[in-house]
Length: 383
Image 1 (cartoon, helix red, strand yellow):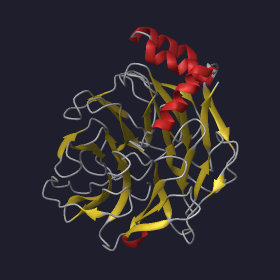
Image 2: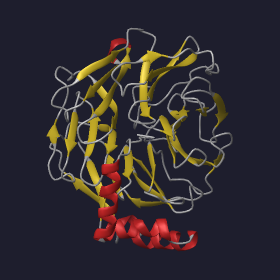
Image 3: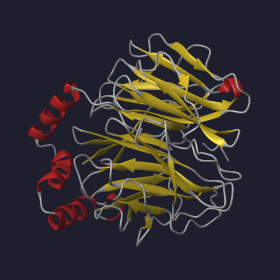
Image 4: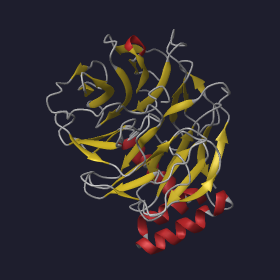
């Protein structure tokens, strides 16, 4: 289960905010369509978004594939910095970076990493990023670069054969966490306070006991997400119940809440989370086996994850990634191997707008959204 597998949350910067203002002022069709979401009343935003996307991307913004030249690689890690800059991480120890909107890609993979499976990447800007390799024992590693991937430093290597790291997230440029499947009956949390240069295992006193068979899914880099300076959420599956764990103190203490997403099997549970602020969140998942249905594949919370309710209309199949559209209170995208779904009512209902295969999705303050997945697929939302 764990082998299937940013918020994929890229740390913002003044540069990114300036880029966002320039993009909005430029009046590009896609940016304008998304900008409507930030200015109009809720119903007008919903109507405008529905019109912009149309059925299966028939008109308005749609995924535009970017040739990465890596058809044998599956990218489950994605960190979108802005409209021009994005990082992807995947199988065969591969890390790519673009700084021209996907027109060209530079292979910046860490040397000697070909046997590793990178499943998460968090980028601070075009030069600084942290990537996570998953697996049992020493296969779980963290690397950091400060020069755009020209050189990498291995900042953590797991030496506990019982641990298996799945995801990481950052609150800001210094403080971040990574999570491992349960060790001795509790999820293990790794912490950094220097931007990923060094890591420390946190005490597990404040972590509730795990359920039998419970673990995280390293499917999209979104099983551990943060919002604000202290709040973080952890998604689980594989047990009798799917759960979301929440910490309001950067991982020191946690509370667990059941999520109304199918569970009871190693292939089922919550695969990805996205929070637009510390209160409002989305969860997606289901059963990742292609021959199995995934009813109730999405859920929403409005109270920081203390309670979750199922979407009235869920995506039609398993979804592994989810992201709020830039600056929107109501619109978000969910992705999976069978398509992309859009909500314009904060997760209450979803409808399919594209049938391409993607594993993860990320949006940026300057009104850009990126997606990545199998066969080297990377795309940006464009008109």
